[in-house]
Each structure stands twice: as C-alpha cells, then as structure tokens.
Amino acid sequence: MNTTEITKYLENECTIKNNQVIETKSGKRIKAIMPVHVFGNICYMEEIMKIAKKYNLYVIEDSTEALGSYYTNGPFCGKYAGTIGDVGVFSFNGNKIITTGGGGMVVSNNKKLIDKIRYLSTQAKDDTVYFIHNEIGFNYRLTNVQAALGLGQLEQLEQFIQIKKENYLLYKDLLKESNLGYILDFNSSIRPNYWFYTFMLKKPNAILRDQLIQYFKDNDVQTRPIWKLNHTQKPFLNYKMCGGKEAQFFYDSAINIPCSSNLTQEDVRRVAQLIMDFEKNYEKTGISRRWWSLQKRNRRFG
Image (tube, rainbow, N blue to C red; front, side, top):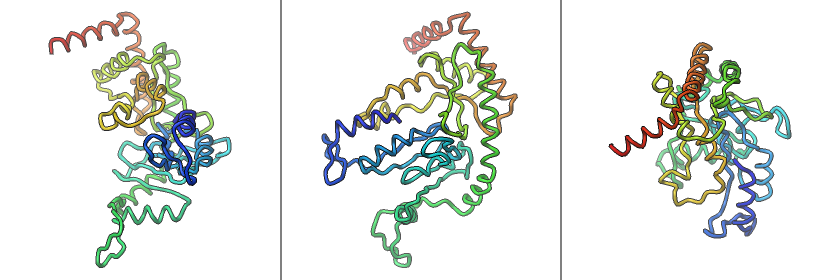
C-alpha cells in the first residue's frame, strides 16, 4: 500500500466534518484503512498508523498471508502482522501457511469490537429461544473440528516457516546469476513467514511473463501471475482508485513459483533449472518475438 497516495487522497479529495473524513465528491464517509500484507510481507505500518491517527480512521489489517510475520526493528519491533491496527484478520484456507481446510480468524485488543464481531458472526441472535435478530447476522463460525486442526497446525507454524525460509534462500542462491529476473526480497525490517516466492522479471513484460508460465506448464509445474488488479476487474471498473503504477509494475513482472512447505530441495532445484533453461532458450532464439507472432496468428484464424 502506497502511503503517499493515501495522504494525497485524504488531503486533496476529502474534508473533515465533525471529526469524520468525508469524500468531497461522493459525500461518503471514509471509515478505515485496510492494508493487505502480501506474500508474507508487512506493509509500512508506521506510516499507516500515523495517517490513521491523524484522520481518526480505523486500521483493519488483512493478514491472511502473513501469519507469523513480525517486525524486528522500529517502533513496532516484536509486533506480529495483524496485531498493530484495530483489527487483524487471518485466513486458514488450504493454500495458506497453516490450514483448517477453510475459514479464518479475527483478532483485536478492543473487546467492544470483538464482541460485536462475535455477535454478527453467530447470526446476530438477540434471543436464542425465540430467534430474534435485531441486526443482519452471518454464519461465519469456525467449527470445533476445524479449530482443533488449526491449533495442531499452529504448533507447527515455526517449523513450516523454517522450511519455507530454507527453500527461499535456496531459490535465491540458484537464481542469483539469472539475467532474466530475481527472487523478490522481503521487507528488511521484518521476519517474514516466507509464504510465497515470487520471481520478478528485471523489466515489466506481460508477454514474457506468460511465456514463462506456459513453459512451466509444458513441464508440469504450476505457476501463475499475481492476482488480476481489482481496478481492472469488471465489478470495479466504475469505482475510484488511486495510484496503481506499482501494482501494474508487479502485475507485469511477477510470477509466483512453487512454495509449499512440503516442497523438497530437489523440487526447488528443478524449478530453478527450468527458469535457467527458459532463459538460455530465450536468449538464443528470441522466443518472445516468435511467441507473440504466433498469438496474433492464432487470434486471426481463431
């Protein structure tokens, strides 16, 4: 999250009325900042918390990818992702560092907020005998079986992080001579959980990105680009967005490569070797130009 863009938006496109932030054009109240800790990194929370305090905004940390990541220096030294803002949320989906098969967790030091969240997540029942609901509720409870599984997984969290760290460092070492790209670093002021490994092209190139993804697919290895940007998705085309240059840079440059905690060092070496083999082929044959010509021809003839 770009804190400069947050500040520009709040200063130039909002006004303060009765200690509330109101977007000038729409008249809507701005209530919170929701930083997303991507790939196990932690956003620049020091700046975000300063902005939130200045404008009286809640901070809701989307920590679904950063369970176990924490600051190692600075004003939040020792603080874990999800425990800095007003509320932190975590995911226990099957692709996360620990899993219960689905579901998640909300944490907060604010008892009033937690009580409200618990009330809404258990169907907002005001009378459990006569089923009276004074608010719209949801059925967002984690089952007891899932919770027990999660506690068992939590005991292994540091072991998972150590495995992922070792594989991350091996990837970095194996690909340090690559002219094509590099393994994305983590924020130097944190101990990350190393959830995702991202191979970054040295120059943004969506065509080359897709070629490499296809090359992996042809060799029975699953990789993928980062998520399609929200402001380019059909449901959000008419919504306001700020900035976007950094997001587009990452979208055109990033390839997420295998990262599971059950990945062996042999697996890591094979993935890295595929990248190096692709690079050699690319440098020799100019595969990018040939591949792009083929795509245009295929579209022309269906």
